[in-house]
Length: 288
Length: 273
Picture 1 (cartoon, chains in turn green, orange):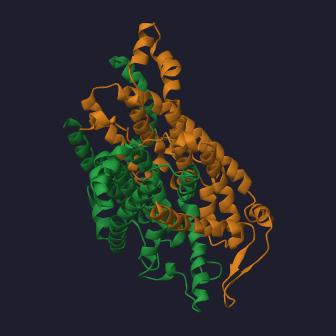
Picture 2 (cartoon, rainbow over the protein chains, first blue to last red):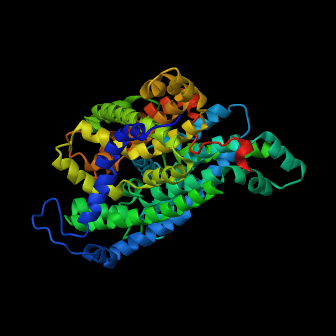
Picture 3 (tube, chains in turn orange, yellow):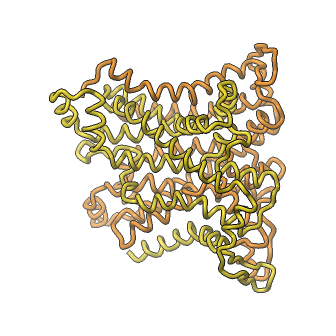
């Protein structure tokens, strides 16, 4: 159906209002504000160019947060995608009880990040947790790994992978199931290993989907806030501090609004960088 | 085949054991790790669900707020995304290949990137602590994802239907609602469900837009644990079970519709190469 220019404007208008008012607009105004001393409670506004950003980047707390989130993203996102692909791969062919399995294996994603944090806080804790229940049988006990400087970040990663791998599986399954059965059979008959089957049969069909999922999960990872807030609050020390926690604390707790807004825009910059690469890849793919 | 069943069993165990542990605790059955060897303590009862309302008197109110705000936000998201996604799907393919992925980027933008100025703007607009403020802000979070997904659904739809409708003299809106909507209804329902789940679980957006007058369940939970009002495990587990139940129920009921949720339009195999 050919749409006139006017049709298109009308169809886009409601979305434009919503995004301009509640997402892109606030983000852009926030960006402008980060070059000034603007704060909701302050009165005088001065232009300070990049001072807020220089301040954030010089803060050792932010450096620690940036280091943590890079590590977190680089480890968690591939694990989520690979585990999600694994689950979807296992569920791709009809199987008795598949419908129930699909719902059951989506359950971890249905829990909020906050709820998942509360749950794992207790599961990893000493008195009623799983870890100590198992260790108890071996005659050992352990304190919560969330209090350990070296273990806290890996544990947070595991908790997020537990929650998001099922979501990745849910998103991947339709793509994997759509691959005609004969292609798998052909590959199997020609003696291809399971790994070659994945590379030669699955990848060509689901590569765009995998890339899109990776972008979504990367954005989620770079903005990690909820689960860390509950599990560790950023500690012990600075071992699990994330840029989002840092921004939140600056803007809403320690009354350094410009610092919070500036560090939040550094997260946005990282996400947008990934995003531009993605758009470039997608446009490239569609033009060939 | 056997490896497949074994691996699925392992996955089920890994992903569901934590939830089973929580479900048991919500019924008062908890492990006692101090005995040697560890044993199970407590007997099966429903008391813990009642105690949620004692520990957090407003819990049932918050559950209602969460349900209503996530439901309405999902409706608003679909209402604004549906026409936009259609317009996008019927624009030139060069435009689509740039604009559609831009919506994925917007969808992946963490809320932290814009909630600081958003909360300031909402305060100035007197939308802080209001139901409308929460609904509109949550709808904006999920709209980009909905546009991208629905755009894929429209692209897969043959244009013959709408062209026939236009030839018959139907206007734009009539075509969109009476002809196209029934054809893409499964995708719309699936998208609405996914959007509802995301809205239901949002923390940061309702957190910065409220100061206690109105609360959603995730905000209440974070208050509980960040302000050290220690909750015992069975009561926390009961609260978790209650807050998971509505979305789990929805997903269970509509699992067939959810199978239609395709993030990326599945291209016909012939045009693949």
